[in-house]
Image (cartoon, rainbow over all chains, first blue to last red; front, side):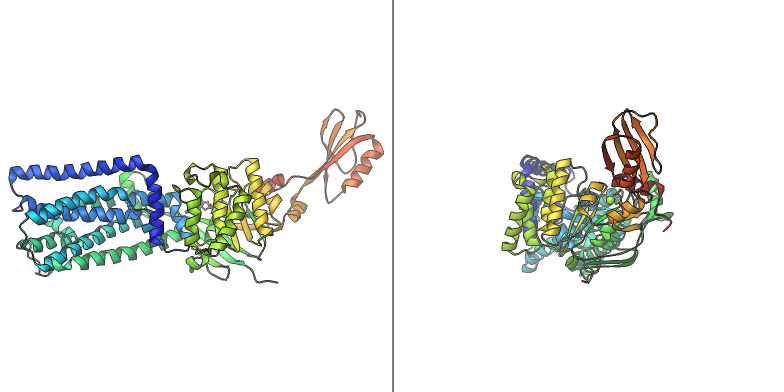
Length: 263
Length: 332
Ligand SMILES: Nc1ncnc2c1ncn2[C@@H]1O[C@H](COP(=O)(O)OP(=O)(O)OP(=O)(O)O)[C@@H](O)[C@H]1O
Ligand SMILES: [Mg+2]
């Protein structure tokens, strides 16, 4: 059923072929420019907090690839568009169909145009994996898809929470977006460059530190300057999966709220 | 008697409206202050509907019609009271419930905005798991009845209002639901389109035995379709019964229009008032309960020579308007 819904959505998207291509090129240029800037800065300073370009590229590549994937798979939950859908009554229409709501929202959009971002991210990630001097073990090879999946779950959870909040208010979307997109930006850099309270925020409130920074430390065999327990990198799937489950619980709560208030 | 297909008991829906502060600081205030006023959108509604009925649910703007329909279709959870539709509680068994109803909310489409109509319908076949033979049979029938062919391959977003409504009706009925909810199915349509929709609703009710509940502001819909009408206002049912009995009770004055053979100086008769006079044409108004039309005609013709005449029933539009405006039913 999911395949059919997504298929329908893609056929819809294909009707706007020019817009699609422009979007694809646009995001492509956008992400390329972002990484290009980073590379230029690093050329002058050689490293940031002791991280070389290739090492930062690992952080950046993981986050970008995962966020792109998430943005494509979870685009039905994109708080901006989902908020509009609720106001426009599309969500009521989903309530009228004999299918699960989560499935329908997943199936309602599959943003192919995110492919550009994914490829960019994957290219940077590929560069990092080759150039960062990783001492490869089988475990590390297996760990990379786990980290990516954890990141996808992590960002997906943020999207779902954002989408759920729009049941209460659309005005707060900006705030939610700051967390999501700001989080993406910030997680692309090593955590030791940030002020301790920001790090605490990423550890305890939105625990992004476990899905990107610690896995990267592990892959690069870097010592942990923050003195977390040694198993911290392995928490990635736990944190990612846990966030997603918590977000889905909140989502179900939001649906019940919506059914009691309407739009 | 068959068991009711819908039974509604002391249904309530109250909305809390929180006072809204504007601006960025206001948004913060909104989070913490809870100054609320309560809107009693539906305030103690009870009724039952038998299979095969075609019921008009009418009332002025903001009466609570859409809110009732949203609760019956499972979109909203009631604040209080009970609903059973097809033996299910809509908001508790949403998926099973919606698999056995059809619903069209006039201002919104149930179809996929960017897809051609036919693809939307195909998708519904999978969603409702409609057996191919049944799907084909229904689609063929609705295509001809609703004249869908000219725009089957047009994306839904490009359809005119009337075309979209026809496509939506078709979509709502493909899975053979025994029950159909229509919220303002004729809103914004021209006379011809309205008529076509009415014919279709009548057909699926008569030929297929589908129970239909519709809300509308166009009383011609009610007159042409519904044997039973419910009037609600302020969230309460003011009237529930046959349209004729509404007319009998609140119909007010009937009119007799007479063309006299010549112009008379006075045209008075007992039991009727002269409402209008224009050359030889005189319009009398009289109470239906006090005087029959034939008695009045007798009285007029006893005094004057008549060339032609016509009895006019008060139209339902006026009746209902008077009920809304003068709140005629409030004391009950
Ligand atoms: N989600 C909501 N939140 C708050 N108040 C609501 C909500 N939905 C409806 N109301 C209020 O409830 C009352 C009944 O609304 P409803 O939409 O049921 O009226 P209606 O009879 O369908 O009117 P209309 O003929 O204009 O469509 C109105 O006062 C409306 O403002
Ligand atoms: Mg309404």
